[in-house]
Image (cartoon, rainbow, N blue to C red; front, side, top):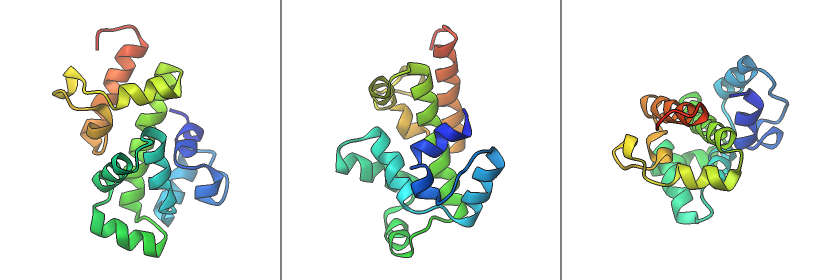
Length: 145
């Protein structure tokens, strides 16, 4: 995925406060602490329902910790990295499906290759995100997925 697509899912310049053009820029900004708003923007990219958004956000950053982060205004580097990982999967799905709504539908529908879990649920950790990306790549290249 291109960095710009990941940054856009996370809220773009409004979230980062400046242009993020390269993978190293993104890594540096995440290391500095991304605005907590990035997490909400990622969740909004997938879910319209506030309860579903909150559930996804709490899978990325636990509820008690998220309350503190909302007061502080920034995610830790590890939390920012998890948020960016999910944003990357969302951007990848949008690229494969070439349509935001189709990508949302796919991301939130249980998939047999994921033990009947929705791809967005699985994508919150490194191993799960890679598995979801592999499925998306198979779809992109016309392979069974």
